[in-house]
Length: 324
Image (cartoon, rainbow, N blue to C red; front, side):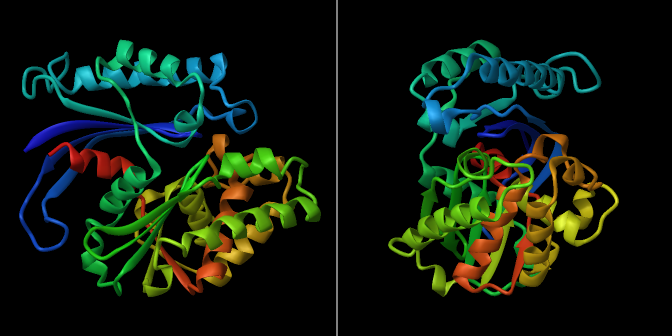
């Protein structure tokens, strides 16, 4: 068993997973087990303004580095540092992955140098295809118990981009498109609540991007839609009428297209204050959840899916698996 630390730095959040991984050699994507030691998430909005300026702002970088410094302390504590785990594991294998906002930023060298100072490893600013592959790995490793029809269509709705992947046991085809909950909010959904015209423009932008996916990804061959990341899990929590965010209830739940459409309608017609009242809502998602829900809704319409299987496991778990 190997103890690993995976850090996923996206447009909206930075997340940490410290896990004990046993690779295994089973049929389903290699088998094995991944046991959480720590799983953390902080909304840092690293990509704030990147769509407009092309640069990571000093304030966004400092928010991100502050969260990462806390993560570095946890990694040390669960490796060779103090506490009940002291001396058991030694230095933990660590991988830092950065995605859409950092790919798009002219000053990403500032981000890289800050991460090296904190973790002692160079962050990998991965391509959209690499992001898609890791998302697929993390999301599908444990789906066998549900016996869903294959191939899967895995959609990872992030802050700056959405990854669309088709595959059965591995990613066979993938496309990264520049639609995400932060990007669509900043570009279109500016009023509180957004106007019908803003919603229509956002939907048209999303639909145009989704249409390009068919050029390289055989989405019509997929039989099961699997949705990842905070926008999808939050929509699921609202659809399930949960009083608070309960990962065990959300993970591997099945939400119908009608439910997604209704939740999307409610979110887009609510004010920020009204959205904040949902028990499952993370404060950092209040202003962007309408766009995230709209992306999921348009995906289901465009590709003809009647339901989505919701996974709490995603690129972060894929990064952890990749370390062994």
